[in-house]
Length: 44
Image 1 (cartoon, rainbow, N blue to C red):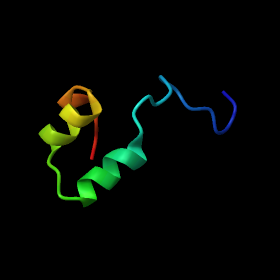
Image 2 (tube, helix red, strand yellow; image 1 turned 60 degrees about the horizontal axis):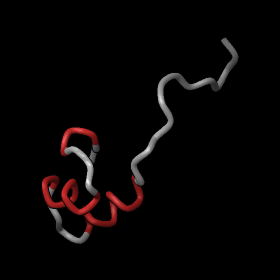
Image 3 (spheres, rainbow, N blue to C red; image 1 turned 45 degrees about the vertical axis):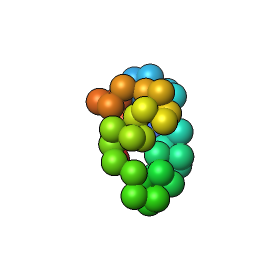
Image 4 (cartoon, rainbow, N blue to C red; image 1 turned 90 degrees about the horizontal axis):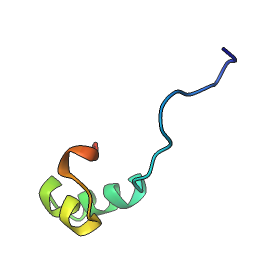
């Protein structure tokens, strides 16, 4: 394998948006609902 090759799927969740919502004080459930994603699919 070449150096710097990453495995797995490309990210589909906007991590910057999740972080911004987190900084506004929203919890995991509220963020998941607002972004229309499963609560288990995001990592904060």
